[in-house]
Amino acid sequence: MMRRFALIAVPYLWLLLLFLVPFVIVLKISLSDTALAIPPYTPTLDWAEGLGSFFSQLDFENFIWLTQDDLYWRAYLSSLVIALVSTALTLMIGYPMAYGMARAPEEWRPTLMMLVILPFWTSFLIRVYAWMGILSNEGFLNQFLLWIGVIDTPLTILNTNTAVYIGIVYTYLPFMILPIYAALDRMDGSLIEAAEDLGCSRLSAFWLVTVPLSRNGIIAGCFLVFIPALGEFVIPSLLGGSGTLMIGKVLWEEFFSNRDWPVASAVAVVLLLILVVPIVLFQRNQQKQSEAET
Amino acid sequence: MMRLSWFNVVSLTLGFVFLYLPMVILVIFSFNESKLVTVWAGFSTKWYGELLQNEAFLNAAWVTLKVAVMSSTLATALGTMAAYVLVRGGRFFGRTLFSGMIYAPLVMPEVITGLSLLLLFIGIGLDRGVMTIVLAHTTFSMCYVSVVVSSRLVTFDRSLEEAALDLGCSPAEAFRLVTLPIIAPAVISGWLLAFTLSLDDLVIASFTSGPSATTLPIKIFSAVRLGVSPEINALSTLMIGIVTVGVIAASLVSKQSMIRQKREEQQAARAQ
Image 1: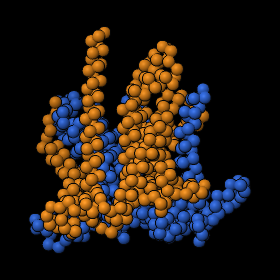
Image 2 (image 1 turned 180 degrees about the vertical axis):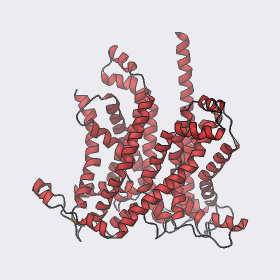
Image 3 (image 1 turned 60 degrees about the vertical axis):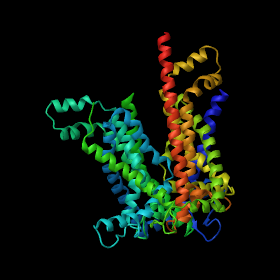
Image 4 (image 1 turned 90 degrees about the vertical axis):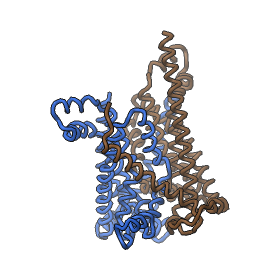
């Protein structure tokens, strides 16, 4: 009995202390005043004064500030747009790849799987960095396009939103391919044959049978790309330019450059509120899928 | 048997070119003589030599390795416990909250995790350094470990454990002698996952590290912000090489153990 208690208590307490409590602190600090001090906010966590004063000290100044300065609105909005567009692009590239993998001969599949997973194990930072050399004005893409004569002046791609889209699609592509491949792999091939026997063309069999049956994989893949892309920091700060507004970058700068911790905390709280909807939808999709399997 | 159409072949080829070309270019240009990273000036390994003399990078690599070993080991222990509790623990007070806390860090933006942990460390007056990065990395990677391990626990035959208990094992012995050997591959891949996540992490480490502890990603990020450099290309090539060898070795080992397992199962079936 003691052992069971310890088994539950140790990871439970760990997560309470290092996951839940920090969030309460973020929430609390987002409701405190900014101050020029170290640490740069007031009041500090003063639990001793009791719950009454805890609530009386709260003020929503930072959240009101977020609505007044249009920087934050535009950052949230443009993060949403960037995350949505890049999710759609990733799906457009990832689906045909997953489909090709599912139709490849059985003995190739483990190798193809490994080729998709391998980039996932290599450093994220390095994969983003690799694009800096490709997309810059003297970069390989421009050299190549100049050489084949499509353009006569180099295109500016690095430090624009286009580079951010490329970066997101590139780094999150495996997350899109794997769940779709898993769904397609489970699919019964005879269903397609049945559809074709019953007079479907190959294309309409694809749209009427294959795509609906891989729906759960598509949904899972889209969320796995959309959710991290929304709060992305590394890609917009390395590939994006001064015009690229993404909320992860704003939070980082608010914290490290402006040292405005209460506002940074408020930015985090609002980002979390935006993410609750897709996260809950994602969990529900996963649950439905695992129920359907059992 | 389905056939690959030309469309499948083209999309697979283009897709894999897209995934691998940037890294291939990076690797090739790490052997470039010239400081200009986009102009080829002949083969040279001088950037690797300079890298090995760069003490700041070597120190950062050492810190990163220490953090990764400690945090992935801790995370594997905690994550396996959490998985066992979730799959086998039955009902207990606050189970929903517990499973929520296991899954939430997987989808949490890194900037928020980093910020919240930093505010905690400052709130309780903990000096930031190697220790705080280890705590932070353990927290998010234990959740990945627990997902990997629990997916293995769900699929395995519970009657094996029950048989061990019936034959006089204590629950601890049953776990050590029956459960652990069966879930071992998942535990190992959980550890590897935690290890790579820790090696790779820039954002959370930036928030939770102090001036005394700079990890390799932090170092790379500050160098890369200034532009592409051949030294970073060399470093990246080394890292890509290590990962590639590791992943291929791991997949060969797991393939072999799968073949062995299949053979044993066949022999067992024949013996019956």
